[in-house]
Amino acid sequence: MIVKSILKEELLTLAEVKEILEQIRLKRADEEELGYELRRAVRHADLFAKGTAEESRRMVEDLSKLEKMTAEIAVKISDIRPTNKDELRAIYAKERFTLSEDELNEILEIVFKG
Image (cartoon, rainbow, N blue to C red):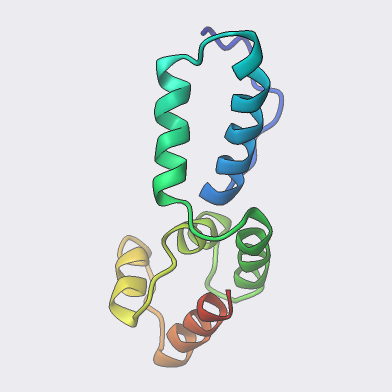
């Protein structure tokens, strides 16, 4: 497949991707056999997506309201759903700042609230 131009670009959580791929799979299942790439993408999304698209989008919106949060990190946190502070610190490892204990706790509360 050759991409001629990008019409729109936005960050999606893995749960949202799973729903979109499922719609594509259902639409194409009647017409033709699914390609290798699509089958692999659907399988990956099924294995690793956590929660529903609505839950993950709501989590991204809640996380985006925090001070030291970028859209990319919010999506990554929503996809991974860290369960402790060490996992959360690993996500922030490449950033130029560190999070305080209060900020870590606030992020984990949002994740656990789901």
